[in-house]
Image 1 (tube, rainbow, N blue to C red):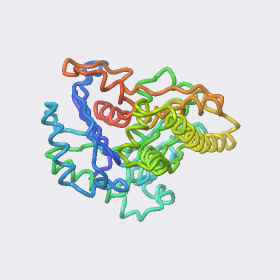
Image 2: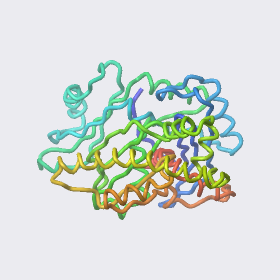
Image 3: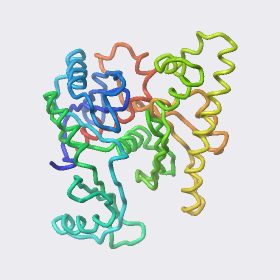
Length: 356
């Protein structure tokens, strides 16, 4: 199986399988116009996904099939992704050569960067353009994903009666979504921070290229677990409070909660600041001009303001639907407006499938 296969289509479904939910959306393209035709968020019970792997295929299949049926999605071609933690991504310079020569040359070159057993990975590469260091070379992105998780995701799609001609990577899909929606921001260095369920991914990008990535092992699930432990409540109640349910609580609880959540936010911000400082220290003290937040916990109370204050860099929440119009089938836009930070990867996947 190829890790990624080029495919052009006028309609495509992106499926993002996360730790606690599956995000599914269908985009269509006519000329340069992208339209959202269907969208769904499927919340998953605890234990269905663990470390990126599906532990309960039967339940996941039932959820995905039900989503397709309920939303009238007919297209069988879907773009899926695997978590960044199961992938090695490396940008290298390679002398310019014929494609037939590059295929074999890059395989041997890449082996020195791939720490997994080469027999256990699916391997792909993409020519990003001319090397900034050598006019006679190309900058090439090497991608090596572990076959076990790739096959796990592809097998799941096959069992759903779907075809997955493209297997992408969460972090690359996030960057593609950003480049698609914010083309005017790609000419300057920017930071993209995805606050996911189990980790926070920090990206530094410039002119559409990734300069740096780092994963911080704290995410929305960890935050909810800490809230549950601190205030002696179950996970679901803590999640409800974290996502806005605190307004129904008394003033004493609100005060104590805000003190505690501010401590958590400060810890996350500290890790983000340390990561960006590290990048700057190794890149001529260059800092991103703006920071963009995405992911399920991007709207965590106080997070954007704390990052902006401590790093002295403007912070915005990414709208993954900024360049997408809503189709006639999309009735309740309030759902999208309240949950849009969850759909960054899914949008990036669907857009990837519609590219020529």
